Image (cartoon, rainbow, N blue to C red):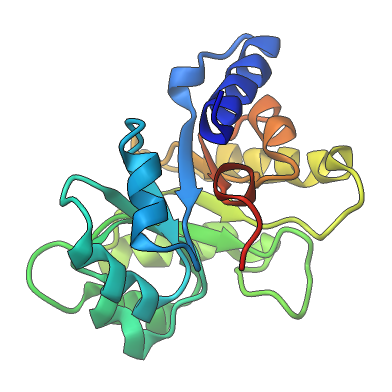
Length: 218
């Protein structure tokens, strides 16, 4: 069994444990620092959702890979780098400020949908919207014309996956509390290699897994 297949099996076990279908969990294979050849190995196993966190790296890799890959941009994005990723990105996970929203809206056609990144642990060194401002920012982004599909968060680093559970639960509660008629506001991007099973148990619809699929970063 490949490491990729092992991840899918772990996803299925975690989902079934709480009565969910694993089909409702999108696994984003985070391929930052990985070569085109390494990405193709996972692609050839049938996987299509891949994630990058650097604009230049995505801009270089994407043209070399099959066009049916769904690229997720999962890192902090500077407004002046939007042009490098906007046409390629299937979903932006890190929308966190009006200036980035304005840049994302520029260009031909409708911009790809976004997730609002929430600073769920109130950590000053991390990007993200303050927990108490999520509804206000969501409403502003929608008025601006963005398609907001849900929320994303990276909890504080912890020694045990269970320590992330309260943060995942809080993110789900924030999503459920947003007074919205937007039927598309359904995505929760949370959980990575060390804690994605807990995230699935708490309602994650998207998990971002790099090391468990590709091995350690070089």
